[in-house]
Length: 54
Image (cartoon, rainbow, N blue to C red; front, side):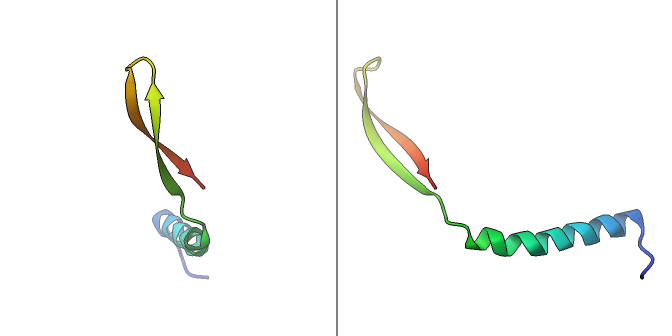
């Protein structure tokens, strides 16, 4: 086993975690942004509202 310093150990741990997390993140569905127009009674006019749907 190679001699690791504290910084080297932290770097190796982060690299291992990233190599496991990246493929999962790529496969995850991208959220969709839906733009809706709603009537705001307080303003007395229509306004745009964004919703994020996963």
